[in-house]
Length: 92
Image (tube, rainbow, N blue to C red; front, side):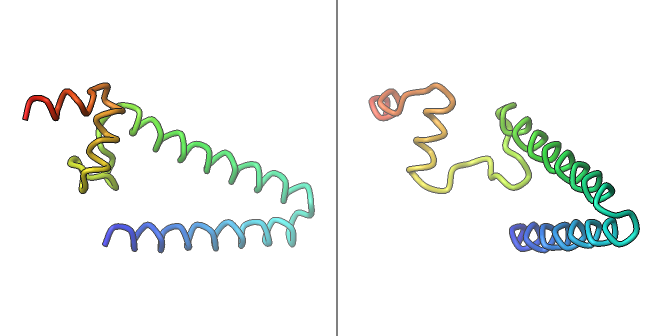
């Protein structure tokens, strides 16, 4: 259910960005379009940096579950955490 909300939110942001560029062109000309586009790029970069910072801290984000949902993801998460899969298997 959360993925659907993200898609709707992304679509709304995309439509708002397109309208901002069109309005900037109509009311301010090409120079204002560059300013609006630069602001949009900066906002996207800040959002991506925030998401990567949350993932880099080792805590699951709001979109990411705390536990792995399959064996492949569990192994990948263990490799990222620095534990070896062989150590886990030997102790079972």
